[in-house]
Image (tube, rainbow, N blue to C red; front, top):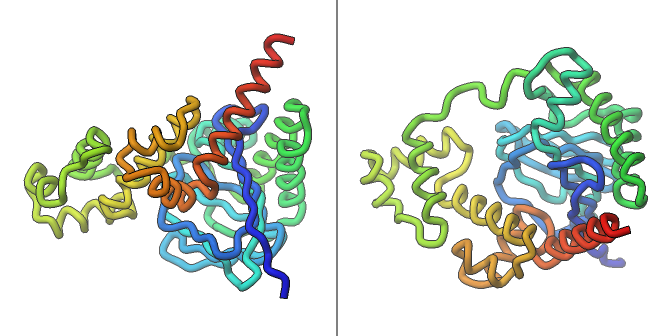
Length: 285
């Protein structure tokens, strides 16, 4: 039996700010528990993806649409031996909210009650928009198709905007997040965090996880990856990004980076540098 090769490309949308894209086929790769600051919207093009989301287990197959809302903890892995292939958009909330306001007349961040949708028409437009952003050098066409696809998705499957958080985050959780974010490279130990916020270690972990969906150490790793992405966006090499964000070395960064982003830091940086070169050339021509 021929072994299926894993491939992935992660890049910026050529015409829509604050929107990344991923085109990938995964077989053995898994995404651990993580969140996105924006939406994860895409179409399964082959195989079966399995993921945990909102306390339930889901499987999405070819032709189905998958939508993960901002800041929602989820996973991702193959639902069968052949893995899965998909085309994903990662727009920030403001991008989707702007389209939703035009479509529904309601301001705010729209929600999507179902994580998986059977809608061939919308799936087709989403796939066409993704292909345009992948294959064409025409940002106008890619942007137009993207906006059309998001408008269809919101009008057919979205609920009116209700803001990003249904309940306020406990002050103690925000305090721990600030402490960890300020010391990414050399963070306080759990007992030190607990002492500084006046809680037991167990109570701190329980409260933090109930609020964010992640334990403190996992949240810290995601913040390190996010900071590393910003450094790679600015042109920093992976080894330097690893050192600046508290990873032991480049291999340590690569292992966690791919688990959150889906590609290696080197591949991610190459796409960013390629895009920057194209922008400079356009400005000079």
